[in-house]
Length: 128
Image 1 (spheres, rainbow, N blue to C red):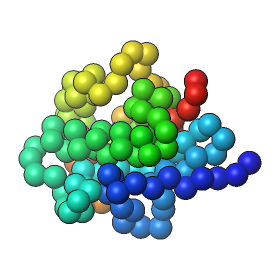
Image 2 (tube, rainbow, N blue to C red):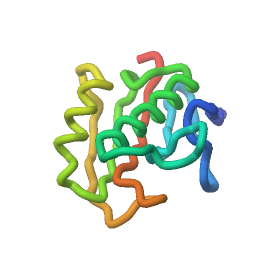
Image 3 (tube, helix red, strand yellow):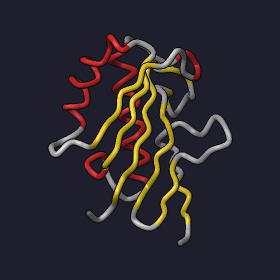
């Protein structure tokens, strides 16, 4: 099965040796997104809510570039440097996703790139 590399300037460019997403068949694997502003490649200004929103916006941009949307996400992984922000993730996520919600994991980590408070990656299934 062939692999298609997904790239868009509407989301931050990769800051390492990875692609924004890879599509294999109808499945798209979205790389982790931190709250970088695509145009500047700088961290978004604001609190953890602003970071969470920027991450969802970045994931949505990559999903669109792959021919889908956040509603096509079947698995979402959330990495937080402070699990005290778990409720805020739920609150903001409800604005970006519709039921049925994707499967999800929320994981507490010691640190993330660029001192981000949140990072998320996802798996998306198109045409389902």
